[in-house]
Image (cartoon, rainbow, N blue to C red; front, top):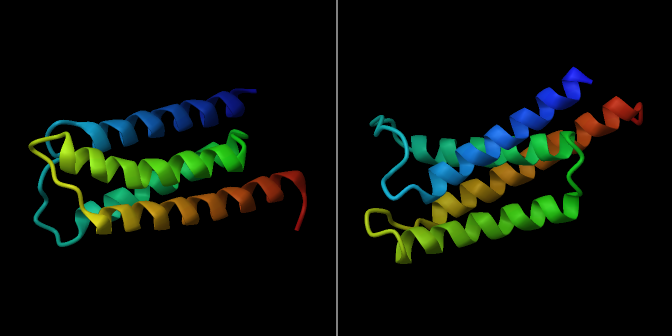
Length: 117
């Protein structure tokens, strides 16, 4: 039972980090100077939410639909509504790739826990 709550807490935390990173009025996190570090961050946070969402049993249709809308919509919000941010289509691409990767890993983990090959 503790493991279930740990997965759920991880999912909620990942969602909160994602929301902060996408909708913070200023750039979330420091500028590392590492090329494409922001793309890696986008990929990882969307992958984490997709993976953990599948692990806790969020229906794939809702989870993936929400993440795709979030990936695209957040860039419009950043571009048009947050004056210190800018929308970037490559961030949305990293988000979508992270969603696909996290969902695939989540599907595999769920199948493995059920004992299906």
